[in-house]
Image (tube, rainbow, N blue to C red; front, side):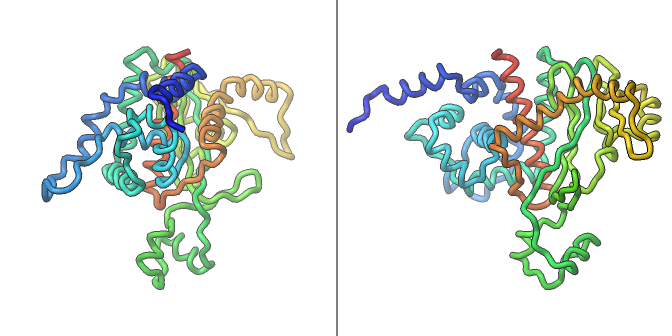
Amino acid sequence: MIDGLFDIENRLNKLSKTGDPLLQLSEIIPWEEFRSTLETLREKERKSKAGRKPFDVILMFKILILQSLYNLSDDAMEYQINDRLSFMRFLKLTLGSKVPDAKTIWLFRNELTEAQLAKELFDQFDSYLQTHGFSAKKGQIVDASIVKVPIQRNSKDENKKIKSGKKPSDWSANKTRQKDLDARWTKKNNKSYYGYKNHIQVDVQHKFIRNYKTTEASVHDSQVFEELLSENNSSRAVWADSAYRSKESLRNLSDLNFRPHLQRKGCRSKKLTKWEQQGNKTRSKTRSRVEHIFGIQTMMARGNLILRSIGSLRAKSSIGMRNLAYNMHRFSSLVSS
């Protein structure tokens, strides 16, 4: 069966009519704003002019954004670009275009990671939001989410050495490359998790992530509380769950001239009063907005947010790109609604 000349165009038009979110993302995000930052990755002098010309940095950057939105591996990303018309259109590729392979995607992400550009790109987009009508307003919410990595099957002795900052002496170079020595265990609701934490600060009105920090999963949420807070918000109000509430945190917030709205937590010996329960219920109406963000990230990744990278440096970059991708998705939704 011979395809018609306009079959692909007709299919793309159908995608547009049904509300292709990637079309909106492609048209609304100011991609060229990032070019000068991304071009720093290509400033290394080439040893020879021979060989294939590298792919455009904006194309590669958009591929990383797609990866972050849908949590795809490099191999899956290469396949999906070749397979999905919506991905091709988002990347401005045609059926005849050369598509970056999995190795090329890995190399670009590795360059971006080593240059530690994820946070710079995140801050750059936040500045764009601030100057284009989306300044931080009505206070800020702080929360953290556990980001899992593949569990390491180590012996007790190996784990003991890793916790002390040492590498088991009998590990080969190849084995070491496959082991995440930076991730840590933590417990939540009596369930154990291995990986990192994505600590975020969100503005109440627009629900953008305004600041973030990546730590090992074992770091308690309250340890990075104050450093996430921003002075660039129209309100001094701060919302957080009971994990952030302590005499010290309340005192610190008062010293910093913030107005705390932190959830209370009861215990067997001292249950919450009805007044305290009502206060929690009132605060949760605002605080729950941050849960929507983690929910959207999980939904777009089809429920699987596990990191495939190894080591804290790559985890910081991957989580930073995931937060940036969410903000872009959120901005696209607000502008097009």
